[in-house]
Structure formats: C-alpha cells, structure tokens
Image (cartoon, rainbow, N blue to C red; front, side, top):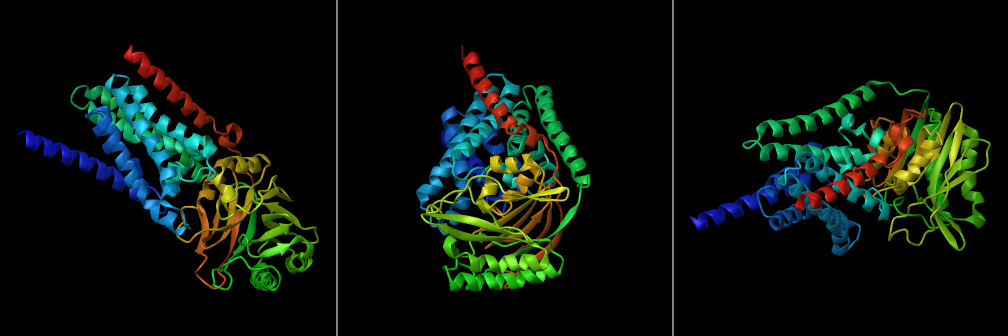
Length: 479
C-alpha cells in the first residue's frame, strides 16, 4: 500500500510538472498559441494547495523553467551562452515560485480573496521590476503571448501590458480556488470563480466595443521595403558598398512613390556612412524625396568620430535632413554604438509622425513620450533574427495600442508590418518573400488618446501595493 501511494504521488507530481511545462512551452515564447497560457499555472496552483510548501516550490520551479526552455534555441542562434538564458528565466521562474507560495499560504489560511489577487499581483510586480532594470525592457513579459487576442489586447490602452498579465494569471488562480473548495465550501468557491470570469468578460466587452469603433482622422499611404538577399543582408561597408546598396533601395523605393506612397520606411543599419562624406549618400534619397514629394526614412550606421550611431535619417521634400539615433541598443551586438537621446517628430496637416528604431519599441517610456507629443504614426526601421520575426517584430504592436498610434515597421530578417492603434495587422509580408519585398498600405495617422497614456504604469504600482498588502496579511494571519 505504501509503495502504491508513493508511486501515485510521483505520478501526480510528474503529471503536474509536465502539463504546466507543456502549456508554457506552447502558450508562450516565439510563436505562442495564446489560449494555452490562460491554463498554464492551473495544475501547479491546484497541486500547491495539496502539498507541503517546499514540494509546491520545487514543482513550480521545475514546471516553469522546463516550459521556458522553448526559448533556448533562440538564445543559441543569437550566440548567447546557456548562462544568459538561465539568468533571465531563473528570475521569471523565481517570480512564479514566489507567487505560487504566497497564493498557497493565503488560501490555506482562509484569506481566499487576498490569495486570489496575490498570485497575479506578485508576478506582475516582479515582472515590472525586471522591466525597469533589464536592458531588454518589456521583452519576455507574459502579455505579449496575447497579441492575437484582439479584444483582450485593448486592455493595454488602459493598464499597459501589466493589466493583461494580471488578468491572464487571475483566471487560473480563481479556478484553482474553486476546485479547492468544491467539496468543503462550493458556494464560496463558485462566487470566486464567478467574480474572476465576470472581470474578464467586462474587459472583453470593452475590447470588442473599442475594436468596433472606427479609427479617427486621416489616412496616410505608407510604403515599406527591405531585402534579405545575401548581397544586401549585412551592414554594407562605407564607400562604394553603401552607395551601391542605397541606390538599389532608392530604385525600389521610387516604384513605391509612383504608387502614391507618401512615406517610405527602409530597414535599420543598411550601411556605414561617415559624417565627413555624407553628401553622396544623402543626395541619393534627398533628390528622390524632392522629385517624388515623398518622405523616406533610411537606417544606417552613422559615424561622427569618435561616436557611431544606429541612425535613421529622414529625407523630406525640399527640407533639411533630419535624423534620429536609436536609444535602446542591443547588447552585445551594438555595444560599440552610442545611444541617442530625444525624439524626432514630423508635422503634417492634422497629423504628427514619429521615428524610432527596432528595439526602442520594446520600452514603454519612449513610446509614451511620442504618444504625449501627439504622434499618430510611428515610422520604425528594424532588423530581426528570422526566428523571432513574430515574437520581437510584433512587440511594437502593443505600444500602438497603449499610446494611440499606428506603426509602420520595416525589418530585415523579419516582417514588413503595418498595424493600427487597435493592434490590428493591416498588412504584413516576410522580408525574404522576394528580392525586394514591398508593401504600400493606407494606414490611419491620427493620434488616439488612451488612459494608459494619461496615467502610465498605474496598474503596475497597484500590483506592487497588492503584493505588499498580501505579505502583510500572511504575517497577520500567522500571529
């Protein structure tokens, strides 16, 4: 009998670890199936209410860490060591373990409502802290798994990504409490489940209504172009190589201008340009802008000794060249570059456009600055790593929902993507779908006011407050 009980315990424990790990593996990461992550923590939460705290901690750690191995292949492609993966996901796993243990302690002591809120609040608070301290900003937060769930994505316009992660984790916590009370206090458990589901329904109704509202204001005809051909795929050396690449892109961009594109975005870091001999390279696109009356945003490595910048140069008809320097550089690949400061906005009749570069869109503060400046259209050169074309390429989509602007993003080794302020993908094509794949798309360009833009990370700080209250409640109940 003892042996049978032991084997049964091992089987249950293994099943919990495997089920949560699989749900995390396929529900989060580079190409997630978003419904799965709503259920991923449930087996561990159910298990934690039936086992000693240390067993619950080990199971939570194993399940979340194993599920996060789905990104190990991505880290290898980037040339990063296992220690880099472990340093990032050990923190996420620790957040999950702490959240599970706090949930367990409160629920088993009868503080059911506090326990319900403590689980998502703990994870959100620690996720927010990681965002503030990490060079990768919001990359890796759970809310990105829900980008295709458009009614739910609209919550980002109120709470930013933090409210999305909160509700995503509130759901399994409520279900786990309902299952825990199904025999001892089913009515109380049903009330908790009903309240949890009702909060999600309210958010989805809001999101559905917001999606049904037509975007205000004028539209802009935007063009995007890139090239993943071997001869064009790397940063061109200064001089003739860069000039050749610029002329190739300019010829293709000219075709988009003849199709009516008012603004055309090219990828980042096409070639190296020295400040002392920029006249030739600038003249290629400036003359094109003057002739076509279109605006061109061109990414390049711009060298002003002793500094090198990842720069987007902006060529407008009959105007001086403007430039934006990327502020959030990707280590270690861009550790030799100097980060920029400040915004660049382009004023049009009843419109304002902004410029950022690739990884800049992983960070909420910069996008909020553009939103506060009234920008309704962001022009974003980018460069991804093929495997992360969806995961990283679409992070920018959430910034548009949060801060009320459409996004035109052209990336090498990724996607050409146009999205609106509701997070809808208006058009998209792979950067390797043709020698010079291109899009011309009508995109809304009017700024949309949002609560998140007004109040910022208020919900993240609310989660911090919930976490502090939950910890105090645990100590109070132990007295």
